[in-house]
Image (cartoon, rainbow, N blue to C red; front, top):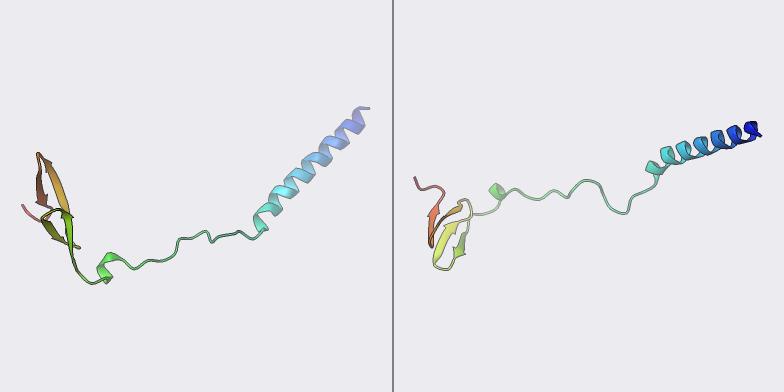
Length: 76
């Protein structure tokens, strides 16, 4: 009786390990790596309205100083 249980357990372990090894070989529905996108430095510079009335370049950023004050990151 114990021999039958041992054989069944060994067979189940063999099947589960084999199925886990073969599972990675199935084709995936999507690619695993993201598509390449052009970096911002390769695009042309343009002006962006960050907040109403506040225009900045696409190469610059804006810091919110609170109380409705905004400062360009390139300003010292």
